[in-house]
Amino acid sequence: MNTLKALFLTLCFIATSQFINANATHFAKTPETVAIQKILSDLDCTSLLKEDVRVNIKFFVNDQDEIIVVSTSNRFLDQLIKSGMNYKKIPVSNLERGKFYTLPVVFKVS
Image 1 (cartoon, rainbow, N blue to C red):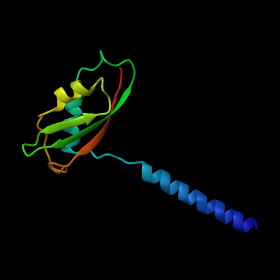
Image 2 (cartoon, rainbow, N blue to C red; image 1 turned 90 degrees about the vertical axis):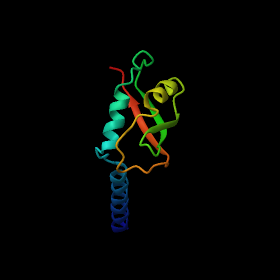
Image 3 (cartoon, rainbow, N blue to C red; image 1 turned 135 degrees about the horizontal axis):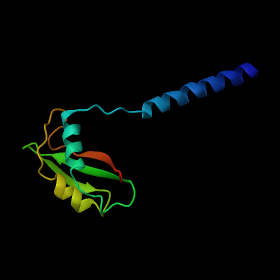
């Protein structure tokens, strides 16, 4: 009986460690991410924020390699993000044109 319990606990430990490793994703610094990060860092949202805010930005890239923001998850920053990101050209190598992407962004108060 003790052997069976030890085997069960070992299997649970292995399965849990596999799930933990699966959630740890590392984002590569592609030309797209660098360009989008630069555009977002140029936005002046310090007057609108009192604390760190996480925003999901839904966008696509058109045929002229321009970002088109469709929606955001924060109504206070929506207009600022759209006006700052829409129609900005980015280098496109890994993104498909016309495909919708959701980008999680954290705006930190300094």
